[in-house]
Image 1 (cartoon, rainbow, N blue to C red):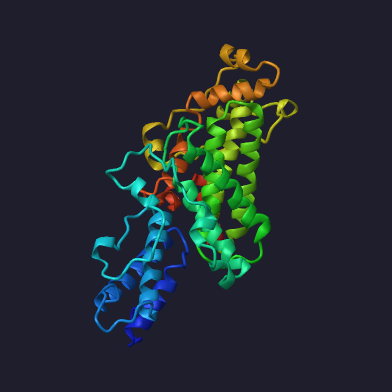
Image 2 (cartoon, rainbow, N blue to C red):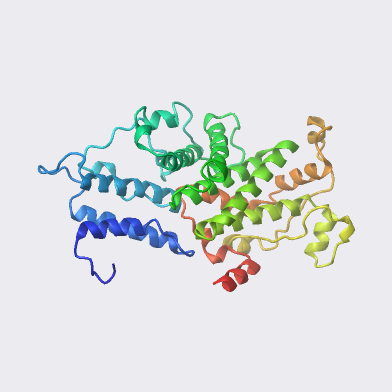
Length: 377
């Protein structure tokens, strides 16, 4: 493509669009986005976005353009980038849609604690009554996966304290469960190799993490932690094919190690941080840990160690003294003291479409993980 060997412009557009579906390495998302930008640029040069007098409604050029339009929205979500194609500049008649655009919640001028709280369409309403006749099981699966990814994004909030009862937050939790079910069981061997697959699963993992951070009930803690681990396992299996899946799995494992670290008695954490070995007979949970601080936080908070008091918060004992295990209470207090601030930032950035997914860069890895990545390379 760079050598200009393909003379036909439409073929170049289609090739670049297909290349935008491939992402390899921590710079892969940027390269994929650039391929799509080139495809859109050439489509605009060829006038595919204009309703010219000799155009036939629904011709192959129109379908190609709407493919680019859809890919533009998808790349804006996955890469945390602005959309390239502005609807006001399109001369073709837009396909009839019954819903608004969730990307509008993430534009710089939008409220960063907003969400789609009413009249969110169902999947059946979107695909219509007659579409299923022309779609196979696999295509319906990937479309529903896309739908639930949008469902997660329809709740924008970077805070773990967003009210649990909001419609968008409830929809987000249900969508995360459905995404895992589709990828893990329903269509586990049939989904096409599109980047929406690892992206949707990563969104599901992000929701599980937020549920863990916002929960104060032991059963919800355990359920969210199990969901986080299950998503990590699938992302690791997808990491053979998708660099983004591998990167998100590493982030999930960071969170799980941080969770196990927070669950240790305070003395054992202090011993490990000071480099003194703890008594193996007193360690109940996994002993591996890391401090996955981002570049910025390592600069400003490099002395901010994980702290948690061994005392049980009286208010939590009053809430449910019979079901709260001491280690869970201790863990919850650690969360309140910002023990997970660094992981919160990374997961929050990933769920915010207005921010690029730059934590895939090796700068955001721990030293041990960087060595492992170099060895794999």
